[in-house]
Length: 183
Image (cartoon, rainbow, N blue to C red; front, side, top):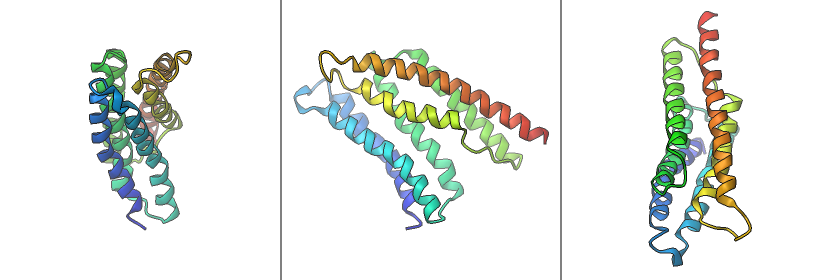
């Protein structure tokens, strides 16, 4: 059971592949509902984000590798799908650029902190950003849930809100690093 958290994290990374393939072919074969299957797989992968942490704490199986891979797995899953949605014209390039920039900077800050012997834990705003992305992205993945339900408009708005949270959390990480460095 001690390896279960890491297995769930790695499964989230590998789940990106079928989600991406299904989403890429959803327009070519709409009668097979590939977009809906992709959404179900995306949600299943997203749920592992909660359970890997839960089981790591429950079984006292928190590892440095797990701490590193968990946010990386989230980024791989979300960014891969956002790139596909960008290709399909459903999200703005600036969304993807801002997410990538923030994630790269936070990764650099955490690496610098680690080199300085500091541990910067996940910040609440970053967790909210990730949760909001996991909700918003599937809204963007399906063309139309119902003619009177604007799922893509809702998803688009939620994604921009997550961009805002992303920038705030990036600033939080930067500020926390500087504060920890001074101590």
